Length: 421
Image (cartoon, rainbow, N blue to C red):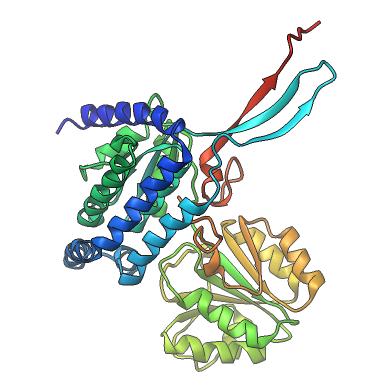
């Protein structure tokens, strides 16, 4: 296959489809989403079988446990994909929404209209659910998309692509509005990120290595996050009945996700009470604790204990490993987070309103939480239907990127024959 020629044809078809999607009416877009959801439920057994092929190949190749977790498409995950599409269909259509209209002294009226971005290229590893989430959000927001999934999910992605095209065609929309790259050749990524004439935005969802490569090579703007170094701070005014389950869930619900806690901060006054209780919970999951000297002293005898290094505070483990540090108070916790966090998601557990508000104001992250697990930092959980990714950038979109994050604004001017003098 001539990769450059193939990708040029894909890009050209996407650009053409994007024009049709930009003017598609809401009912057609919703119909496509409903048809895709119905197809997913109908073909759940086929999707499971395709996923099994991918998992067998991944196991044989020695894929890391965190990646295997992302690759697995459970019965619940299949149902959630369909539900997510239906939730997207139920959301208001942002396209064409007019806002901020106001009269100027000259007599003209100025406002803004929400419009699609155009063609969105999405590069992701392992997660087949991204295929459906991305397709659904791009369809509803009037965009075309080019999806380049990882080679480890090729069978499942192809099965899902068939259902997406079926849904688009059934709703009278161009099947080329969602295209999945058919080759696993890495040269396809190089081509996709250097076609600004066809692609308006790149959304990478993958490991740090992939995103670092794209930051160096891409000629197309990106919506990205580099890593997820998430924190939970247990304040000395915390309700331990809340703190223990939240700190356990934030780490142990799933290890291989970007919103998993990687560092636990505990106020010095409650550390002798909190840490042994949490250690008992973490021991059930054989979580390795990498502790500062104070925490290490409290947890002497814990089976999976190591001394933390400076590098640990900067590490996204995506594994059963947790950094633990004792801090004096909320100020020290905020200082640590703003120094080491990747500005993804950070949480405080406290019953003190003033400290909670201080944490919300001063922690410079895309999602900041009070008395809740970091695992909630997710488009589906936020009511966005799904997400195309989680951005810890500060320009254009931040946090879980849903429909609004896939649009832009253009100015409207309404006049009555006015001229500038």
